[in-house]
Length: 76
Image 1: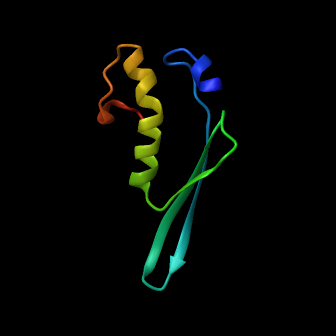
Image 2 (image 1 turned 90 degrees about the vertical axis):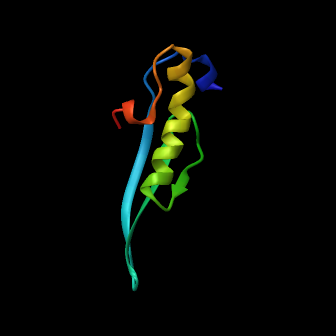
């Protein structure tokens, strides 16, 4: 797997798609993301779920490099 060959803090590629779905109860933002080393696209029904996924995928590399990995320190 490509992710295992990458060193800590090496650049990551995420392909992000964001759109608004219109519903009778109101509009809702949706997102999908694909990591550069994955073929599968993941879908999210909220911004919070998307950010949680990104943080989970970036945190191990940040912690391996000995850098503080608090969510509020990620410049997303």
